Length: 308
Image (cartoon, rainbow, N blue to C red):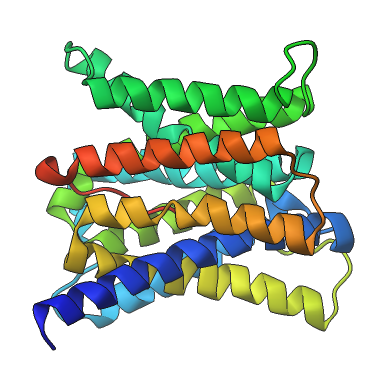
């Protein structure tokens, strides 16, 4: 396989992973609205099963030991914080945003996260953001404003709770991306995300017991839940890891803009979510933010936690 063929493979894998994540957002909305599935239960089960399977995969590789990370107190504390404040927080807030709005709005609002990261790093490093970064932040704010107001400043087009959980999911996406950076340099990413999922799932289980199954269960419910756990979590993460190794995190992040786009399209076509011209313009602004930030980071690539 030539280099160009290998990069082509990396592009396809990143796109496929992002599309799976986007489709899962619409699937979650369907389960909530039509099958009565509790979002907290779905989060705990998804994290527990996907985390266990991912750790089993990591342990099966001869060069990886999933237990080694616990020998360092600093790393152990970091992975616990990532599991609760990163992995669990980003899943729970995203699902809550879907519950109070819809998959399209929740996914797009969550993608304010990269702009939040830009502002945080500029403050932390005590330096002004670049022109591209400033433009990205302004685009994010403008896009969000269009989505939540439909272009009219007189009232919100979504509920206050939807806006709260949507913005909170953007902040938790930022924490999810930033918390494991030091760990990802030192440890295999499958170990970090696997433990993060399992820890988050165990913590969530104290609030939403996984054995207390809710909702209407039939072949459709079982198939969608299986897709969310196996394909949109385990397989999507695995192929995204491969794509990052082939094309790098900047290009992989650039292609991840397929996630909000695919989630929005599926929600509009399948679930008949009303989406006006101002919503599409706002979505385009936020997608452009991702593109600008990804392109500007190509020369300074660093490890990052993939979307889930």
